[in-house]
Image 1 (cartoon, rainbow, N blue to C red):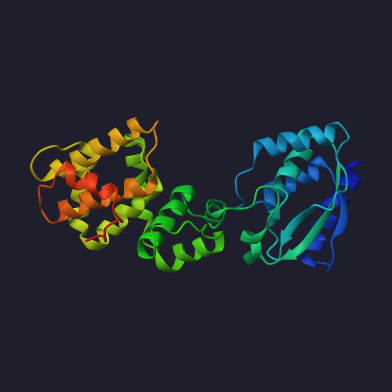
Image 2 (image 1 turned 45 degrees about the horizontal axis):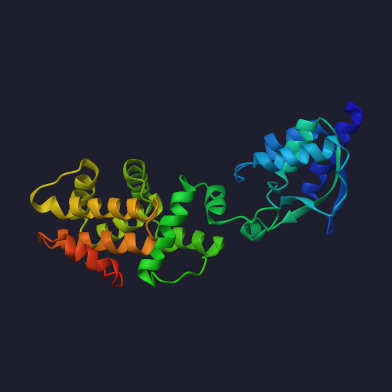
Length: 284
């Protein structure tokens, strides 16, 4: 493909973005066009997948690439919604690819696209511009389970999670850094820790800050003894179970410790151990 043909390919795509056809178009995309599209049209997409790019590059360079019917998709807003890994492979292989291209896709349907690895809640939150998307997705899931049924094992759909972030838990984001700090120090899941602290703060914001501070600094005595006991029990459970703790067991222990701490009680190891085999308490 000559330089002029390259400009023609890019021009055709730009024209079809502005005046979208009802059906797909088969277009030969060259590396220069792919580069422009990724630089100018790939805003807010999920991170590229290096393994996919490597696989596609190998297929292109070994002439195993063909017109399979898979599509590169552009939204009605002009954004690239699907195909970034194929375009990246086109650039890396430095060869043209022939592909179907679809235009005028409703951006609201982005979370429902099921190409390669389906987009999960974290992908959709990342695309929507949220920081720490994986932690946020987990935190919102746990906040929702606490409010509804902690024992529900159904997967929450990406669009549903996005709706929860925007409408039900718009104030959960400040707790993500706290959850990540706990994860860094104690290796507890950041999302679950963030959700629990978020729910504790709804009960008593001042006490929640005190609880978190004592947990992070390792305060041992007086009113903080139950927090130390909690962390010691969590650690022992992890050691005794090949480095794992069931998420419901962990939640039960932490919630029980919080309820004891909030009431200003001394508490005991026996109370926390009993909580492991009982339904998760209501957060007081």
